[in-house]
Image: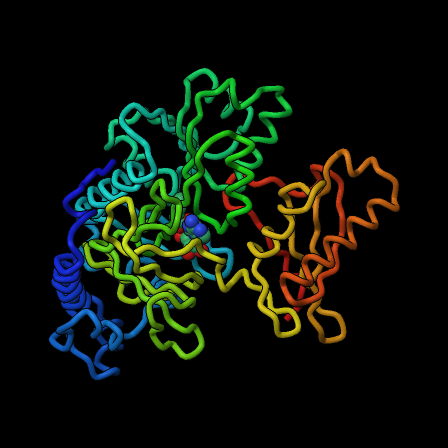
Length: 432
Ligand code: DLL
């Protein structure tokens, strides 16, 4: 049930002491080795010695993605390159990619965290883990891989793509745990059905899905379609990769591994720290990283923290499912809309498939949202009148849930692009 019960169930007061000790060390380390962060601290009039309590963290300056870009590629590392044993990098769709580095100790620590995460989500040494997160510069593949090996599971490093072969391996190798993005798990199920295979012919018991936002409704559909338990795993390259937080079988919030990361929630506008339980932007600090420690990283992910103890016995704070990234949020006539909200509405409507795209355009200086929705084969063969009725129904339900009008465009079954990794949910056609 636990990989490291002592740490995971550490009484809060001891956990706080451990966090404070490690925070002080981290601040000292960065101040000594990272000139750009030292300059920021000097400018804010704060020195490492000013961190005396955990609350003092709020005095420290933030780190943003821009800081990583400004220091591209290795400017924030606190060890010489001879001590760096691994590099990962984001795809960098805009501007320079962000580059992260790991020392031997970091890689061991990450493997240990991922071992804790996988066990937390019910995997064991008897599991056959098919790891369909991409291997390569993306942290998903190798991150999960090391943790799964560490717990002694049998790992199939299938990586993303080649979906028919994935399913063949699932059948032939007796996969019990599938790890991939939720959108890829959905697509895999579509291919499984096309191949005429029933999930009951497989040994699959659970899925550990993350790397992109997904709604509770998506969880319900994945669990029903596959006949599995679906767990949410969260992480980001800047902190390490997957394994920052994960759900336990209670499935109410993701435990943040606080002996490695300190979490705060801030108001993204005012940058004020919000009281526990309030919704805002997640800010994370690494307190056990060697090569690339990062203080108060603005994740841009919106969520809230849950302080109540969890029945599973873990004492570490939980975070709610991430609503979305502020980068994916579209503002339509002043109303903030996240793809995951649209997803929740769509997945509760009959004859709608779990594939959709938000298209944003600017017409006459006004932003307009169009939601492209795939309909089921059955609905598609219906008469036009019925399709029009469905379109109106979706539009009405979207409006009542989002608080803003969105035009709905029904599209043919299987016409929207399928995802083998992170799904693209927003197409921004505005020329700004
Ligand atoms: O996506 C690491 C990862 C790999 C996590 C595999 C889980 C599983 P990045 O590519 O750096 O790292 O992207 C990080 O993805 O800031 C979130 O916006 C989003 N994200 C990751 N996990 C979740 C999740 C990996 N469970 C960015 N729910 C983060 C919602 C998630 N969003």
